[in-house]
Image (cartoon, rainbow, N blue to C red):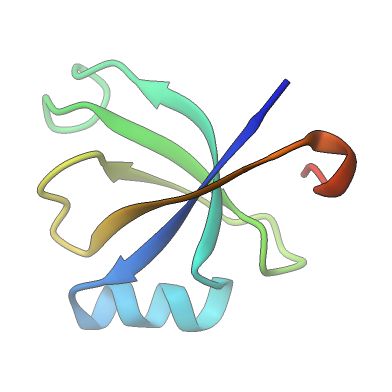
Length: 82
């Protein structure tokens, strides 16, 4: 099993605050149905850089707060899962 990680690049002050508080590296937990989030395909993400569980939905394209950059694929043995 491969864990897909992404980097959130902030576009707004809200995005900058989220990256500051929870880190820029996030794990994709689920790919959402377009009906789930404003009619657009989205990802449910969880922060890997913070001890608190922080999850959020981010649109795959045209998210108002973030750009999503594919980061890497990491084997589960080297990544702590939430």
